[in-house]
Length: 206
Image (cartoon, rainbow, N blue to C red; front, side, top):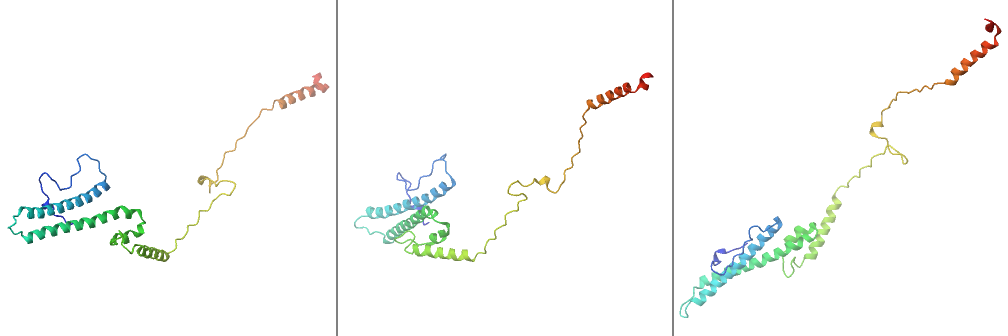
């Protein structure tokens, strides 16, 4: 950016951009944005100072005294350069707020577009169409993405698949036996012996 800060007076009227007070919280994005506005403000202040110097040259000279035309024209030229650059930078600033709202595909084309009576130029619609066509053509040249086959399930529709620790292994369980005490059998056996003794006369005589 064209700047002539040496023209800014240091008297009561300050034409330099004021600094942000210490302790004011600022994000990184806000700091960058404020830096841009500071440059614009300083450029405008310099242009005002240059014009003031040119006007003072005219007012301070006596009617019979000739004005240094070269110095006078130089001051006006500097003022014009500063104002012209500031005008351009303001268009860039407007774009910086509007372009991010559009698709990223158009960003490079929109940044290079030169402003006329329209911010993005008269050929804005044509540029958008060209970018769309180029994007469509480039997408057709890309190889088709192969779809990955879904993993095969080890179960069926009714039952869930077996757990990993159960697959390919046989779990052996130690057999267990239960013994029940049959009291009826022992009682019947003793009763049978008693009845057999009583029925045998030889045994009873002994």
